[in-house]
Length: 215
Image (cartoon, rainbow, N blue to C red; front, side):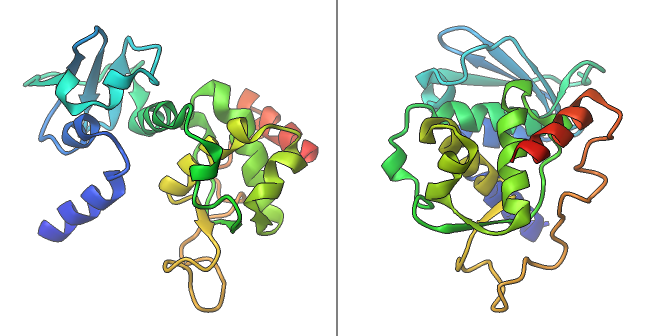
């Protein structure tokens, strides 16, 4: 049990304190922010609901500005979003406005380890994620070249790359987690993985196909 908790904490350590606590709770909780807004998190069902629109607000990343209340007996609704969606909006919100020079991967070679589940991402970010992953699926690429190759700005691309890295979808070449052979770790999933690749006849699937061709 202690090893499992350690692994979970390591997985969530890039997330703000309130979200780490909510994800490690024994049951559903309500997170209320001092400047308005709430998040209902069901760590068991891996779902959440929220009325927050601006995830870049300072209070979303300040442990002293939130209150966490247990909700015994509560259950996630069918239209609640997956927890992975919350990971993305919170992480991207925290990275908004961060100086581009502060990204440790800026002049490194990046390789794709796995595709995220596109259906679990915020819709506005799916095109950028798909294009980055499609590019890196072909071959490892220098991070500084990716915005140029995609015709996008560093401000648009680097926060997404960092979120992919934090969620262990992208690896900095030569990092301690990379095998000595330079091959992706065993169990890595590439875009052919059916769980992460959207169905071709779905709206997201068609978008994914077009973006792969663009990249």
